[in-house]
Each structure stands twice: as structure tokens, then as C-alpha cells.
Image 1 (tube, rainbow, N blue to C red):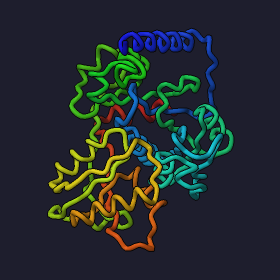
Image 2 (tube, rainbow, N blue to C red):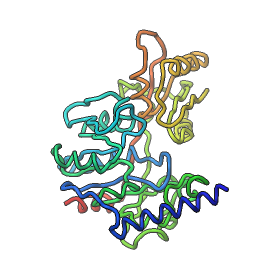
Image 3 (cartoon, helix red, strand yellow):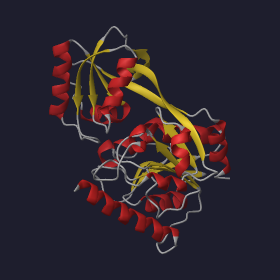
Image 4 (cartoon, helix red, strand yellow):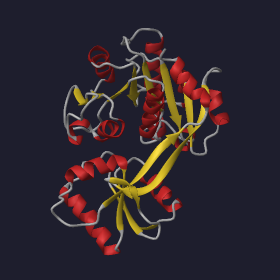
Length: 327
């Protein structure tokens, strides 16, 4: 039954893409070049650190990037300016965790809307910038882009279409990509049958900086400490694998749904778990911004530690293409 529904879903996706390819569906074009970072699957492939790396690349070359996102699972509606280029203007609840993390970590303009094309138009009209980076924009074909960056991990290569699997589009959709970043153990040879001849296929590594105190990145957690991991992300096993590879003894993992809105009771449960194991609380950067917003600092408890990561894209062709596409 799932296979039958997946084939029906695939037919709908193919018809939608064909309508855009033939010009039967309207596409918004902005005065500022747009760069999309996306994937073919539901759930995390590493888009957030890649968005941050693209911000750094453009800033190194004197360009002013802005970020557009949907603001998934935010409490606000419509257009929301999360960061105006000077200050964060709203809470993590109103922004959504990923958009808030973009604002917090990059310090560049961040605007969210359910329709990313609406957010991009607003940015192009009102915010001084040179390039608009769209988080999770590959399926948002209503917005024209100068460059499509697509991340491919092992689950994508081996996956099936929704609902039989996690794929929002089949692998042949990679022919729309200008840059394909292979994650983990995925090779260029596995992607090449589905890309254009001129698509750049390059590896991307998600590199961890270690575990540090949330408000003091110079204070690193000793590897002889036991830890309890708190994760409300699509693939918490990646955090577990990373912490284990760094040498930490993991006593327990407190998992929550992706984009979970933490409550005070959730935090108390995590704190009690850490106390029971005489362990430190370790979480992700995306979870941290919500946990700190909910934390009752009047109650003494173990400090939060965060697993800090960044995307490493060492192939110079990627940077060259990112710059050429927006000039």
C-alpha cells in the first residue's frame, strides 16, 4: 500500500515540476540573486551549517548576504523579520528554531514567511543586501534562483518517496542542481547519473568543534565527563555518534520530536536525568536556543553544554561557482 501511495506522490511531484519547467506556473524573480540550499528528503542532512558556511563565504568576499526561511513550527504567522541586520527582533518561538539560530549565529538579516518567495521579495525591496540565501528552498520552485545547492546523504541515495521513505523528490531531480554536496560516505559517482554534466559535485564534511559551555566557547568539556544528550532534531543518532567519536561516555539520550517546543517540565526531566547519572547536559545549537529561552535560571542545575559544528567545503570549485552565480 505504501508503495502505491509513493508512486501516486511521485506522479504529483513530476506533474508539478513539469508545470514549472513549461512555464505554466508563475515564478517570482527578485532584483537580488537568490541561492537555495536544499535537499531531496524530509529531515536533516546538514542544511543549517551549510547555510552558515555560505554566509561566511560571501562575507569573505565583501558581499552582504541575507537569509530567507519558512520559519518551520514557529508560533507567529505571515512575514516576520527575525534579524534586521543590526538586532534580533523576535523570540525563538516567533522565528522558529532554525531561523533564530541563523540570526543568532550569523548576525545577518533573516526573514521568514510561509511562502519563501514572499520573504525574498520583501528582502529584495527593503533590506540592503547582495545575495539572498534560501534555507530549504529546492522544492520552492515559485522563487527563481541563481544557484541551487543540494545536499545528498546516504539516506537520500538509499531512500524511497514519501510515504514509503523520506524523499520529497526522486533522485533524477538532481538535474536541477548546480552544486551537489555529498554528505558522509556518499560518493560523486553515486550522484553523477542523476546530475547535469556541468553540475559541480563536491564533498562536504560536518566538523565538530567539541563540546563547550553554551555561553563560553572557550570552556570545553573534558572527555572524562559523563554526559546526557538532549536532542529534538530529525536524526538524533548523528549527535550520539559525534559525541561518542569524541570520546564522551553517554549515559542517556533524551530525545524529542524535530523542532520540539520545550516546556519547563521537559527541562526539569532532562536536569533530573543528568543529576541521576552525575552527568553534564549536552545539546545541539538548534535545541539550545529553545532550551535557554525556556530555562528557569532561578533553579540551580547543571549548566548546558553545546556540540558546536560547522560545514567544511574544501573544493574551490564550489566557492568559485557561488561567487560567479551572483555577480
